[in-house]
Length: 150
Image (cartoon, rainbow, N blue to C red):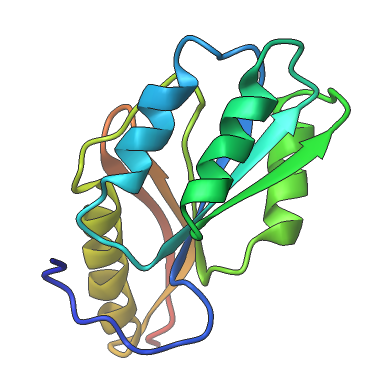
């Protein structure tokens, strides 16, 4: 159960984007860690970036069993191309990126959303957030902020 109140909305609050290429050995652990999040208001977009192994099939299997999962298949273009394809398809208000050979802690998205809510609450006190990056490997929020108070 989420510790954060979830507002009823049509769109998910977070889109989790995972570019997938030659990660058949790791993709199940990665996806399972995302689907086991304590914060549940998210969609998971898996981009099969023309992977020559069984990654595309594995991703499709997850999509058949969980409505939060969507799969995009595209010719190989590299991780940046895959992320860009995902971003165009994302419905969430916020984006989170996870590499297909990584897995995340169960509270990763909850921690991200708490950080976002804290930052957004500070906007009302004169701080404008230009960029938010949350990195799953080191679990930190990197902020570029501009103070609008004169």
